[in-house]
Length: 239
Figure 1 (cartoon, rainbow, N blue to C red):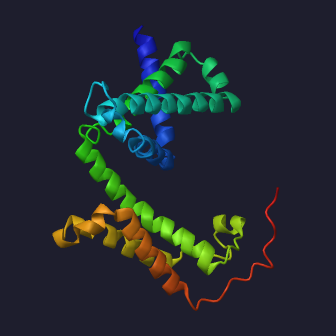
Figure 2: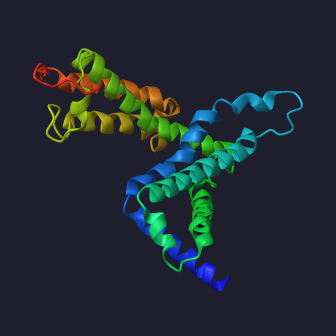
Figure 3: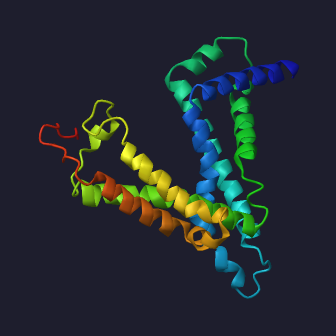
């Protein structure tokens, strides 16, 4: 029993080291439950108005579903990691060692449980006001991003886009679009300035629209006069 527990601890350490080498997955796991809250929060907000619903807090209704979805996807990622180890022969090498067979599976279960508890935004789900505040602040970042995307595609590029070039460091679009970054920062500042300037609180109340409008207009103005990219020499994307 003690040997199996030690082996499970060893396997957990290996998985933690693998996760540390891929920090992007840490970010994805943290953002994942927040995405569920964003998607379903507004959908269920008025459900408490139904007669006989039994509670006046839709957050209380929403939280169990968010917990279940976070646990489900955490378990899915753990299962995918196990399949990857099988495909690469890692499991075969472990089976040739004295390590406990059960620890290979139990460590994945324990890992999923730890991650599921760690990534849940418990403080955010304590009350509806805190959740709404987070949602509005979050929209203050999404609005400017949407504004830049739409302005770039429809007004600047005229609907012409070489998709593979976006993923190449030496592509025709370059590494960094500093005009886009400036428009993004301006949009976010305008959207969230109402948090610190009471007179501008309406901008924060409509953060998505304020950020979208500022970033859209500023990016379009900054990109005016820039030479149009010649995409004729760009090879077509492979099917």
